[in-house]
Image 1 (cartoon, rainbow, N blue to C red):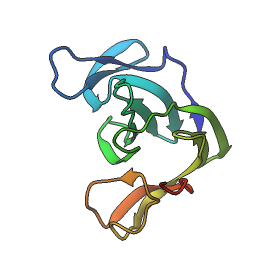
Image 2 (image 1 turned 180 degrees about the vertical axis):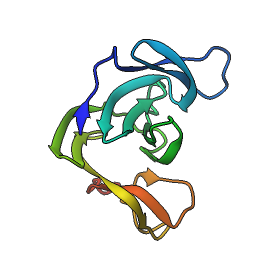
Image 3 (image 1 turned 135 degrees about the vertical axis):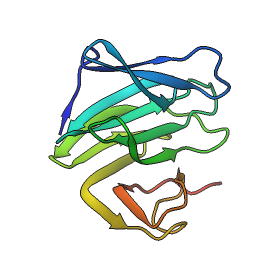
Image 4 (image 1 turned 135 degrees about the horizontal axis):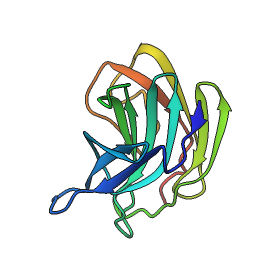
Length: 152
């Protein structure tokens, strides 16, 4: 896994979208693919796939979108990290292993993300830490680990 430069992978917000949506550019050329989010926090290459982190650029309600794309730029897995009225900034991205990265988001919590070659079994509603949401599914291509602070 390696981080991509902005010239290799970038997104540009589409105009007049109710929810932030952006076009993907590869090597400076526009593609037909779009993803949710307005701002690209980071993009990584893993084998023939892409792992990207986007935010909507909404103050006081920052949600981090984690999107795993195949070689055709089709979404094969995604998750959101955050909560209403929470603020956070994506920072300190580190590649730990060929299939694992860590980063900080919301309250300085360190999150770890591991990607899988094949779909792994996932039990909806209990497989992810608090603050992580996904579409209802019994499979995933990446797992997020983290220990959010308890609510007061």
